[in-house]
Length: 222
Image (cartoon, one colour):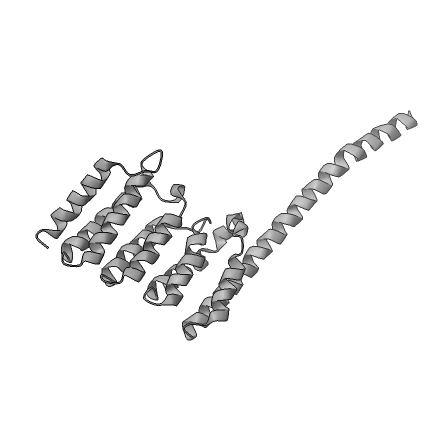
């Protein structure tokens, strides 16, 4: 009987011990990855602070790129607590979009943050529309916005949200019909919006005609 109990205990140890070790290891990795998120976020906060005080601070921009890295950490559930990082990155980039610093932060930080749980598409698209209105004749700003929109994964912005942005840009075209740069941007954003509703991601001839008509109506005789 004693031998039987010994065998049973041995079997329990063999079966249970690996599971317990696996659970502890998983908890350790989750905690370590969560700590990594906090460290990277702190590095980015510090770099943004330095950029706010000194325009063109190359080491600060390089620190942001280094902290973002391959971006895998952005998928960590611990990113839920980093909403202040998203808002600060968004505010800094769009407040300084007329500078190389702002455009680089948009590309290297805001766009990667779209992968995380902190991404707020509505606030991002509102910022895009506001930036167009404030920079009607800045092709460099327009290109940065287009590149950012194209780089954000399709599933992160709904077709309703992309349609909202397109019509918001059309409103700006109507307010400033003589600004050819905004008309060109409206066409590109319209194509971006239309492509998202096509399975193959391609804009059709009918889409092109519709976009041209939309813009022509807003521009009137300009």
